[in-house]
Amino acid sequence: MKHTIVLLLAAALVCAAVDLELNVSVGPAFSTGQWGRNLGTGIDGRIAGAWKITPSLLVGLGVEGQVRSSTDGGSASLTMLTPALTASYYLRPWGNTFNPGLECAFGLCRSSLSNSGGADPVSWDPAWRAGFRWDFSLGGTYRGQVGMDYSSVLADIEQADTFLLLFGFTKEVTL
Amino acid sequence: MRKTVTLCLIAAALTLSITGCDRNPLFYRLASDYYPVTTIGSQWEYSIEGGGSLVRTIEDQAIIGERTCYRMLSGADYNYWIDENGRLEHYEDHRVMFNGFEVPLYQAWVTWLDWPLAVGAIRTDSASAFAVSQGVTISHDWSRTTTVVTVTDSPDGKWSNCYRVRQSETTINWIRAGGFSPDTTTVSRDIWLAPDVGMVAMTTADSTFTLNEYRPGI
Figure (cartoon, chains in turn orange, brown):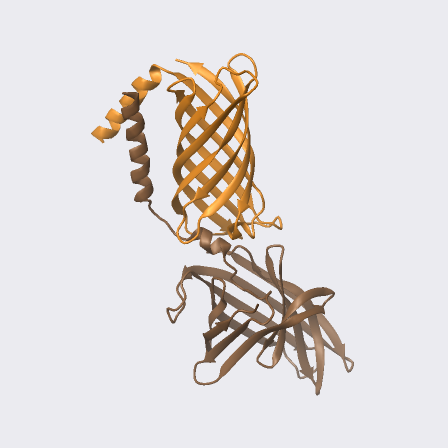
């Protein structure tokens, strides 16, 4: 407990001294492999906060959620919720229209399947993702972002891989 | 300082990941085919408690009820299956013998299982029909409730990550003539479905089937 408080205080002190970016993005999630055989294309949404260690390098925390339903529009649904640590590196942080970058994240995914009034046991598994970003200015302190990710949930016996497209925007905040 | 904090956060996440609680092969189950009836040549050989055996084979494709399906030879009978659009469908062909004649009562494709399976899922199908034979009306009421009970090993312990499914099927046939009363039949069965194998065990009130050998088709 003591260590957690110290950790949180340290994080707060660091955050107070740096520029922050708040990012929200959504996009379609396409399952790769057999695990999505009875599920349709998913919807991915995420919210994240990151602080700029340098103009190019950002580190942060985020939460990502994905929802999928049955291929036939039935009652099955799979929800995946992943709190994650993120790291991003942008090549042209000064660029207004072209600021390509890379982002990766590592976290724990909570997967939950339900169908016809039932629910399978929930599984918590390590998860990672990595992908490209194209960041551009929307004027003021807002920035737009498009990108693609490849993500994987390192579940027991079979991992769940997903290809994602992302559309989002970022608000720059200085504390 | 910033580096220390970042490293601490990464270490915390790694620790949580490695010690990850409540892990189970959910995605393995999602990826598996729990009733693989779409490969011609697949064969299941069951032993029946008390003696005897049952062989089930996917013979070929056929058109039944205006739909293309897979034909399974199960003992001496044919069963018809379709696995598409997230459902396993079975052709229900209900008949009754009356005065030496076989009277068809109800024929239709009915969903047998909804994919993906989930513990606690319940599905109920029912039908009411009647037929007239030799001037006598025969009514037919049928219902089947399927419940996914749990994820478990098969009774013989050979197969893991099986879904145990319980089916309760009630049929009421009533020959609407003097001297006849409704004939009610209720059958309950527990079925164990193993990933990429299908039914590996089935128990009813008076029989137990256990899979001896499974040869997937090509």
